[in-house]
Amino acid sequence: MSGKKQILFSLLAAASCTVGPDYERPQFFDDRRLAAALEVKPGQELPVSVRWYEQFGDDTLNDLVGQALADSPNLQIALQKLKQARYTLLINEAEFLPQLNADGGYNYDYLANGKNLPRTVEDYYKAGLDASWEIDIWGGGRRLNEESRALMRAAADNLANVQLTMTAEVANDYIGLRTVQEQLRITKENLRLQQDIYRTVKEKYDNGLADESALNQAEYAVQTTKAQLPALERQEESYKNALAVLLGQLLGTLNGLETPKNSIVRRPFVFRVENLYNYPVSVVRNRPDVRMAENNLIAKNAAIGQAVAELFPNVSISGVLGWQAKHFSSLGSSSAAAYGFSPSVTLPLFNFGQLINQVKLNREIKEEYVYLYENTLLSAVEEVKNAAVSVRKEYERHNALERSVRNMRQVLTSMRDKYKEGLIEFSDLLASEQNLLEAQNNLTDSSGSIYLNIISFYKAVGGGY
Image (tube, rainbow, N blue to C red; front, top):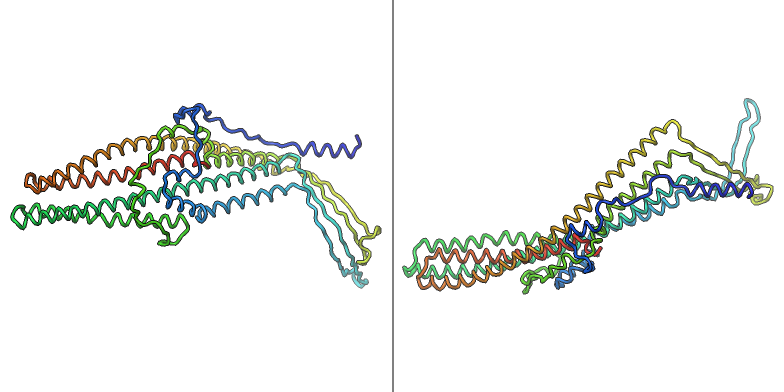
């Protein structure tokens, strides 16, 4: 092998060296332990769709989510961060590549040779190419690229996480809006009922068949129910405003948020509870926030390699090839040719301790991100488990509340008949009416909570992202 080939081979071999630790995923919990903690049933795994909210069967909700994913300022911010990460990667990938620049110019110098001596004039034209290459012998540049790629993936994960969060928040606020609107409808319906009862009591009072206490109680019930309306109307407006902000719209400009004839919360979603445990356990590790935490950890691990590479000699080569001539017309001739090259080696000496401490610092930062990754994974497991339990228990509560509303309707009908016949005191009728209103509001709240808990479940398992 010739000397030049040996040098080239040595440079290529050296450039394949990468110092610093290679990334290995921390093995906190294997899939078997995760599956046991989450009570996941193997062999019955159902995929999670990013359009999970469409199963609720509400066109307005579907439209709102679509607008949010297209127009939300928060989503645009995350998208810009991803674009910035991509350009950072492209910039860093070119950092350790050979650099080649074209150079040309004209030089004029009017020089003094000394006291009382004639001056000289030097002028010439030059043109050519400048080249330089900082050889990435120890892999610092490759570690920099590894870090940039990890950060770009983290930015993509952040975008997915914002999309998931945006979908869940729109769905939550929409269900909240429909729940409040349904409570408003029930309250107004009960107000009409109480006003009817008040008229009955007033008629009995005018005929001397009811005392003033009953009349005051009837009026008190009417006014108490009226007092609930402003708070509910304020909540309704707050939910509408929240949806507008999520969608990047001015307040009061969203359509389709009026009280519908058949609200989504009047028909609680029929969900197969067994599906809470029929998903791949891998969705927990693949949640956008968990992936983002791991990619940030990968980036910090690569930063250690960059710091280690700074401890070793830096080798670079620069050179020039071109022409230099007195007259412009002579540029390009063989007699005007000029070239040169200069290899150099730089070795840190007096700042070596500083570089060592930088390596130690990066190792400690990496350990911090190990714990951040572990904590994010544990939080994901907790959210999935809590959401599954909440869905199951809310269905149990809803079934009990449905029975209580049916019972209270029958009780109130019976009580009204008995009061008209003078068989019971008005206070008994009033208590029955108030119990029905409370039961109806609790049932509506439970219907909304079923949706909210299902939304939390899909968000917890990554929502298909």
